[in-house]
Length: 304
Image 1 (cartoon, rainbow, N blue to C red):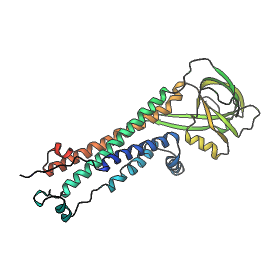
Image 2: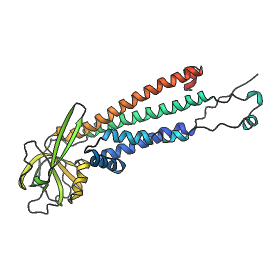
Image 3: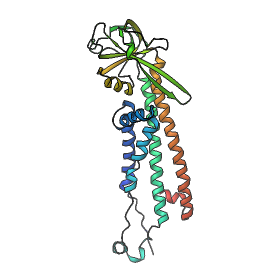
Image 4: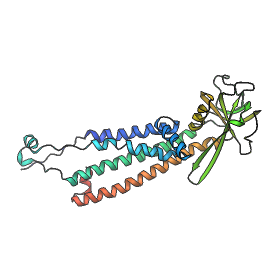
């Protein structure tokens, strides 16, 4: 009687490949959210060449290139007939996997790559939504501080009245695109009256009616103070322009809506990325089904 044994031992690639994809997605999610590393380098190249930066396409480029990288090195090497014959009795030697069977295995692994990447993008979108819940609110007493580069040492986030000199001549503009609308937001540094204008710790969001050609104006602005909320592109721009922006800076937003807008943009881009990758996974799933049908095996057996 012939007895055929089927190994249930997982190949290391079945564990390491999903782990690698999760790490790649998490790493570039962090870089995209903080505007640094490879994401920042490619973003600045896009600014120089095209005058615009596409966060979603930049993120997907790195993920779709690097996430499947181990897939190219996970093909199992077939044992030689002699080695197989020495391992089991000649009558029990299993047939050598056909090229079609190997194609099914590769299609399955690539499908897993796409699925994990889609889940990673969806997780990034949910993370952005979660970060919205962690933002400060306009509730509570208002704090009144000056735009000093040193005092107070650690201002509280939330409802704030900030007093200082607004450097209108150093206004920066930033376009944020949601899929059905576009928003332009402007920021200007605010420094303490009479202080060195190149040492900046605070930025304020300007309203559409704020003039951009006026000289330094001392005023008091109320809004929601948020730590490290200046877009990374603008943070680097001010640094390149010679401003000594403190590593921990603060942005005074006019309203909760404008404060949350960048996170909604981030969440929507990652959600759309997850949808597009999921469509690619669906196409790959149909391709794999066709390969299984050509091989003549039940789908359940191919999935095992």
